[in-house]
Image (cartoon, rainbow, N blue to C red):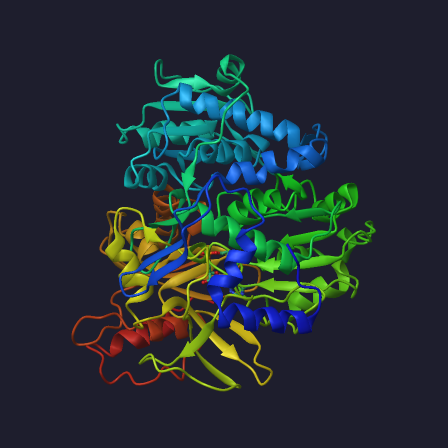
Amino acid sequence: MARITSFEEYQKEYKKSVDNPEAFWAEQAEQFTWQKKWDTVLKWNFAEPTIEWFAGGKLNITENCLDRHLPEKANQVAYYWEPNNPTEKAVTLTYQQLHQQVCRFANVLKNNGAKKGDRVCIYMPMVPELAIALLACARIGAVHSVVFGGFSASALSGRIQDCDCKLVVTSDGAYRGAKTIPIKAVVDEALEICPGVEKVIVLNRTNTEIKWVEGRDVRWEEEVQKANADCPAEPMDAEDMLFILYTSGSTGKPKGVVHTCGGYMVYTHYSFENVFQYNEGGVYWCTADIGWVTGHSYIVYAPLLAGATSVMFEGVPAYPDAGRFWQVIDKYKVNIFYTAPTAIRALEAMGLDYVKPYKLDSLRVLGSVGEPINEEAWNWYNENIGKGKCPIVDTWWQTETGGILISPLAGITKTKPSFATLPLPGVQPILVDEKGNEIMGNGVEGNLCIKFPWPSIIRTTYGDHERCRQTYFATYLGLYFTGDGCKRDEDGYYRITGRVDDVLNVSGHRLGTAEVESAINMHVDIVESAVVGYPHDIKGQGIYAYVICTNKNKDAETLRKEIMAEVAKAIGPIAKPDKIQIVTGLPKTRSGKIIRRILRKVAEGETNNLGDISTLLDPLVVKEIIAGAIK
Ligand code: PRX
């Protein structure tokens, strides 16, 4: 692939991609191994929506991630795996070894009943076997649904049921910093209400004692011993499902975002090459968890499609101390480092003493993802980690977009702190007002939409296509609506301002307010609750919950603890509210709608300019809320 190497070239390619998207993407797709070439590059209709890229084409993404590289790169490292505990031995996997292990585990899946089209749930820590499990599913055409290891049994069972998974792949436990977490116990609890799961494949990671269900549970290590090392790649239609990944929206129930094989492959690879400007022989490290889309696209698929060498990290940024990221960068001589603003802010807060011992001189490019990066964090990252020499790519995208849509191209696009800058070729963003009218020109602000499909756009929400249409394609007819607000400055640069819907972004984790509210409402003493986000120094957004409690005898502290436990049980610890205020009522319109604007302002510490409250059912409620606001 001809990679973009200058800004002039970017402009030329961008123009080409808009003038003739089909020809542009067909050219990009040519470089891959197709078992059969496509008949049509693109068919689309956003009203339905139907979107097909490379229809009629046959491929297997793992042939492109692995087999294709073997003639030249068999002994090149695909992953350096760095364990949670630095005293444990690191693992290196070459392309040849990864290929072998993927094929072997693909046969394990088959031996345990998985077939093309079956859904396989993966609930694991960040071990090499996690990447292997995803690729093994793709090898046989099974659809993986990875659930982040921090989700609770209840959240896990909901996701398993929603897409009717037949198998679960997990481990006995997980190491996270100083803690050992019993992963398999969570799966056992989840499966009490998931009768459709026939087999559970359990990797031994922590030697944690586990419950064993005869006939259902099998051991990863034993199964691999029995399996054949040869597994031909299943021919997949370009539009066959590759994976499902659940994400939160404005309603209580997370939705299964569906990505397909061909377009996802072409776009994730294209974006990786151009945004990060990875060079042969370089070392790339994305610190995300594979449980989120960033890990799917930019730890597993795109770097392997590019034949890159990656670091994969099991641990957390501050274990054993806040210098861990920087130590790992020096250890592997990482050139490209991709992390989240919340991690940057947390490490910044720990002070420079943790940075100083490390050289960081291998770094060439820095990346940021998952939430808006504030100017202060951007500058700290730039000065102290990049030493003012490394371009920062602030990459904007979403689970639904599959890959990075708006971002600087490293070293090519002039950066500006906290700006995602310009769209990648093939991406046509527009800003619209509330009514859906396009806002033209520069120096403007509106809701961010995309007006033309790119190859890795969401195809459907699993089992409920209407929900996909409603959520993304019905707000503004003919457009994909991102749910984000956005500014376009005088230079035409895009700056994402955050969600305009009821979605929170807490430490880069996406949560729906309705989802957290329904978890809080599980508490027997709570009749109603309302959750809003507020600015948080480290997390980006914190969770502020207003709750109405019917039990007058319960003290606030006990109630707070119980609500936390309830939320941890329903969703996971990531969704625990930071502040809980007990109120006797919520500000509502006469028609009973909660006015969140007021709650948001109070949570932000604003008590004066609350806007018009004359339409409130009970204006006194606001006074009480202000008086009891938690600082
Ligand atoms: O609000 C945007 C924010 O994260 C949302 C997508 O979340 P998720 O699907 O979990 O994917 C996160 C990783 C791609 C977006 O709607 N977001 C993501 N990247 C950025 C961002 N906000 C500002 N700047 C970014 N670079």
